[in-house]
Amino acid sequence: MAPWKKWLFGINALVAAAGMTMSFTLAALGVYPSVNTNPTMLGNPEQGPIGRILDFFTYFTIWSNILVAVVLFMLFLKPDRDSFWFRALRLDSVLMIVVTGLVYNVVLAGTVTNQGFEVVTNFFDHILTPVVTLVVWLVCGPRGWISVKVIAASLVVPIVWLIWALIRGAFIGAYPYPFLDVATLGYGAVLVNVLGVVVLAIVISVILWGVDWVISRLTQQKREPAAAS
Image (cartoon, rainbow, N blue to C red):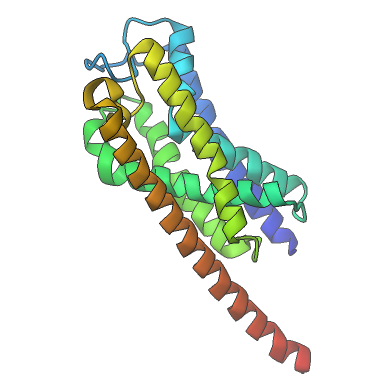
């Protein structure tokens, strides 16, 4: 792998880590008190730092950004790293952050009010990191890692997040997103919403698989004439 790809992995990891560090700091310190007035949504303005931190780690956005930071840092340290589960995590790092960007900007953006420096962290978490991660994957890969088994394995982390969000929500009566709000919608409607997101994730995974195949073929075609000459 070309050395410059390693540095792109590092830049990608740094962008995700920077966004997470800033977001965590604001959440832990309660710099901007929550303006949430819906008791079934996370963000109770009266809770202390522990509650704010637990809320922070209940958002899919946070899980996806942390995964990007960890996986891309691992690739920066060892670009030739490879195993079945690491391939699944690499797909997860792209899939989950793309879902984060799409769902936030298409569905949730109009329901969120950001204050002060939150505008910057929101830009990192929901726009910059998703775009940078997708571009770095398109440019650097690694290629040829996606398969049916890898796509299936990549669903493990999102499922673990979902279980955590629903179990915590059942205890505190509050959920991270409106489409997961069991207290308001009931488990039946939430299940339908979750299935919709799962279908979206599978569709995006298949699209990424197709794009990966096309890029691999084009790269191979470029190499063949060079090798023949």
